[in-house]
Image (tube, rainbow, N blue to C red; front, top):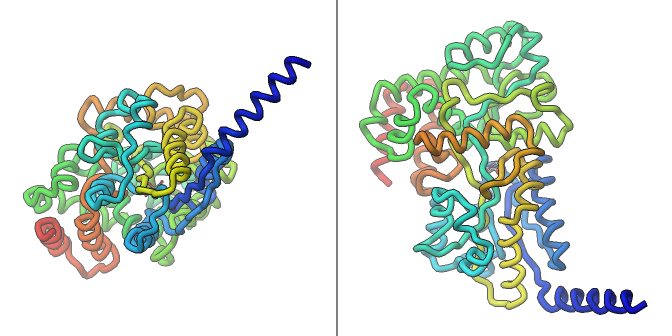
Length: 416
Ligand code: GAL
């Protein structure tokens, strides 16, 4: 009886505690596909478990272009959400506007500095203060394939070079299937482009041409070869690609309509959500020529300044939950990415994730861990938009020559 009485007191106190600090968190994100929605649902569950109210602010559109437009109008009108999916250099731009909250007390209580790779922590800090919380590490330079389609087409293994890729793609075409499932949107075009540049030119060239936007690298023969190779890939996509969403392209691979897709490992989240088994139904490999490099895309939530004390508390709890081991595991198992928090067990993860985790560590040591331009980790948003436009125009209009595309790239890089 006495024990029960004590338990009741504890329960009452815990209940009071929760009630006193419960608040609402409005979270802006673009995770609306099957695998993405399942993943963000895990964060919602954790926040609700802490007694908070989750207000979902989902803006559809892979890559987040639509979401960023909506975010701007909300902030300008003075009613920002508690948290918004913002990544890379864009975090610095929001922080410079003075609209982001300082997360240092959560970060130091939870020891973020010792739990995050420095290259990641630096992206999340503005003038030395944390303003965003990271959820994962996505690898962008992946190639996905349907195992049954490859068998049917007589492709024995995943191609390792671009030349091998074109041989395999010809076999798929001959078998009457689509070689490359693609969605023609600028961020998807660029996802292929940066993997081609990395595969053709290697890590140093990628860094010079794509991250530093060095005019010499952009004007080089290696860039010429990259653009030629990129254009060749287009010949293996179907006529209905323009405008298609990325997850519909993934579905084409799942449904044995297409062999390959070049996409970050959120595609794996789609395969898994549909019950497909890695290594059996679908295969993962680094994009041709890129196995010793890693283009990374770290999703993170920037936290906006809020006035209400309960909302601030809920926001701090959200930041702590995001970096918590429980969330990092369950979210990333669903999302296709790997935990960004260091020293997590990979025991429950599949072989694609284990490879990603090993390559992340190895490439960080060798200097070939590189930020993805397509996914907003490498250059300022305005500049990124300008070079994406050049690449998508080249992809869409066959009459634009390689030489013209090269000089447009240089012009876009120096103009901004
Ligand atoms: C990326 C984002 C991923 C994934 C993808 C497609 O930019 O980092 O988490 O959601 O867009 O929507």
